[in-house]
Length: 180
View 1 (tube, rainbow, N blue to C red):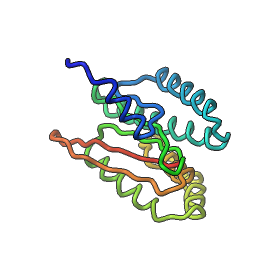
View 2 (tube, one colour):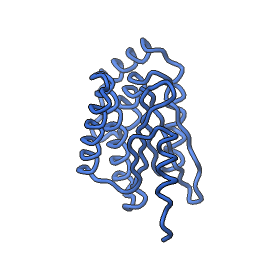
View 3 (cartoon, rainbow, N blue to C red):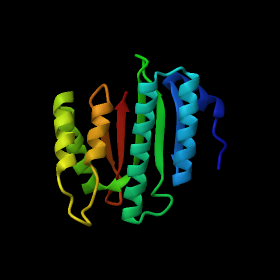
View 4 (cartoon, rainbow, N blue to C red):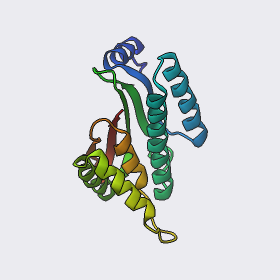
């Protein structure tokens, strides 16, 4: 393996205002450790309690979704890995982005679901959240793209942004960006 140019990576991270970046396989304990680092970083930045709670909540929701999806699909450690970036945008808002490998049909469903949420205002998202919360879930029913996704959209200050990059093996790389 060639040694990466760490100075160039540092410059890129600073230019992109990336606070935390992780790429690779992860476990429950690693999610927790990155979460602790995120909390400490936000405290040092004097983030408002609301912003810190929302950023942490969005990070946890995204990583748990990726972890559960990969486990349900039986992906190998390499394929079950994720890329997560937490940073700031030009307007000082926090941005949480995460991506992982998905089956193409699952990714297409997620994109359409996120697109439908993007057209809703806060009141409509709240009503949808309450409606989804009241719906009975049949035992053994598959979960995903439900309450957690709606909650992400509710916490976001801008509509969720996602992309799907097709891979050669019938799968795709799904990316989601949440601005808080």
